[in-house]
Length: 281
Ligand code: C2E
Ligand code: MG
Ligand code: MG
Ligand code: MG
Image (cartoon, rainbow, N blue to C red; front, top):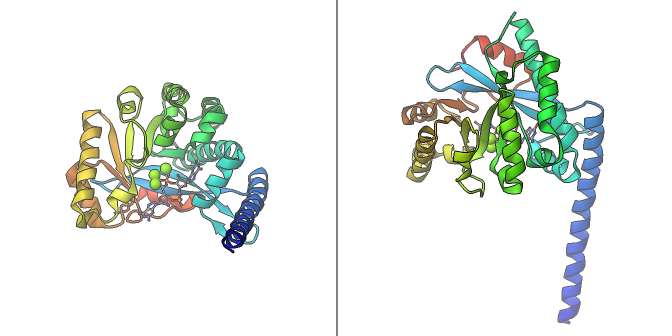
């Protein structure tokens, strides 16, 4: 009897796993079509000086509306893109689209519009593509100097292939780009990399910022990250800045920049451009 029960359960699990696999494959097929047909979009979210509220950069965030009209969040389609290898063409598109958009803002401003644009790089993309060449060509095509571009990497890229990632980071720095460690504090990497790699900015993960006003432990972590960044000569961005109180507290603790719904949600390029001229908070 027991055996029969176990067998039945196994079948249920297998059926479930099969359904999930089939759904992911269907999503992969639709995502591939979207990438090939140029149907992905960017929204841009401002990164602001916590003291003045002025926009200093915009992070480009990929958006995908599925064929059935559903806006699929990046937390669903980026993993599918990574597992399927689609992250390579998707990641190229992101670099090209973001630099094209920044060049357009410059044209509208009749010169340097005064902000950087930040693009996320996936560890899989770093492992499988020649990101340096892609960045170099995108800068050339849009006639932008490298210093206008910021590239956000996660600690997982350093865990996956430390040597290759380090080499890529140095080459990107040589192009003039700024390097930011995204979601800092959530990875499993060895902190020793911080002194060896050309990192300009630490982005303090939202999980430490959200609710920190009522949580001493979170404040302690944020303080420690800010101290580390200062000692190593890096600048800091706090993610998830949703209230003026958070912005004030973070500024008082010495954090230079913030990103979050207080300033703006991610918005289409045309709306983002209007935020440059007028400080947001
Ligand atoms: P991320 O790079 O850490 O981007 C910040 C995420 O936090 C964005 O989510 C943004 O909408 C959200 N966010 C910003 N401010 C707030 C806030 O005040 N409160 C809350 N609750 N959330 C806030 P989004 O757009 O859903 O993107 C999720 C992740 O997907 C990104 O996290 C990034 O890791 C990844 N992603 C997005 N676009 C790309 C891309 O082109 N390439 C790669 N490799 N990853 C991407
Ligand atoms: Mg990011
Ligand atoms: Mg982040
Ligand atoms: Mg994050």
